[in-house]
Length: 520
Image (tube, rainbow, N blue to C red; front, top):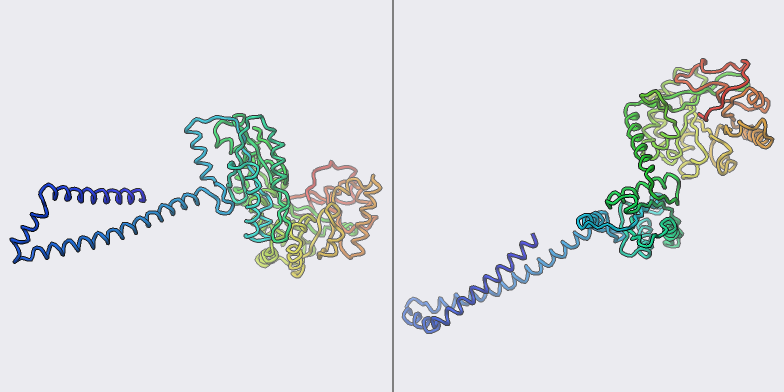
């Protein structure tokens, strides 16, 4: 549109100039002044001269008006040109960091493909994996300032070769003429961008992951090099914060397998194909079943089971954990209504959910919907969940406790600050981790730890459950120590329906059961 306006303006000016010069030369040739005077004299009674003067004045005024109009149009065109430049800049740059964005990168790649450019270069894909935490804790303004500082640090190392992609992703193109040690260079990048950032007197520490891919070693097509660098970054992210990975072909196979698993999981979630199994909790004083722990099981069409250690983290990462939890809790409560009234349901809560202040309301809503008494529900949490957001966790647990729901601290003794958590949170039960029960009969230190936990729980008037009981000798020792409740394959295996049939009689002559992976 602007090009058309410019063309029209230029043509109009050129036509006006041509008409003026044509009339001027015609007047010279025809001796126009004498001709006009003769015309005026011979037609004096028609006032031709006055009419001609009026036309001249009108023409001059029109010329002046046209001049102002042309000047206004010129300014408008200039403004539009500037606006067009701004729109183009906005579409090709990140407004926060001022770095070129994916559109600019795509244009750069297209030019390379058109020119057939092939050279040795490396692509670094960088993700700031603490950006969401910074955003939630400090707000948008400060988190945007963090991104600006990171961009400045990257530009200092690689001027003119840094791109800003998604919300917290950066990309660097580095010519690799001298066979640079890319892993060492990546470590330098991490040290630079992860150095503390000071904003308004606050020291902010960030973490990042880096994926590396090279041309022509990994691919010739720049888009494929970027794709493989991104693939390596995601693998590094799975290994933990601050990790660096260079691309290898096996990574792509792993990501494809994960993508397939994610697709299958979403299908299973939609079709409610993830079921509940129940493992009994036995009172070691009366030998009676007092409750069941619900355990999620995903059986595929092939009859194989996918471990919860695979699909639970997947649900957390994809944001499906809330929907999965609500599905499973509703089903478990419906099943538990068929149990004897004195038995309780133990249900595991994901650490990521404990930070959600609406969790207690969701759980209570399901209990009301199903008609399951809140005092028959016990939720299990791990110590690691308390450290994601201690204030949110304290709020949620208090709300649950106020509703009469019991709280169990799972895997007790394996976390960070177990004793301090007993003072800060309203726990009703401690569950001794299976790793202690496995060896406490043959390890004096482990035996003392188990005894200390049982004594501590008794002093605090908190119930204690021993997990992973697999041998009669372990059971007898725990009874001697006064442990309240036991759980494990010796006492009962997980089964689709909770009943006495999946409980091993405690008087049976059981001397050995094969060790299995922990199910609770």
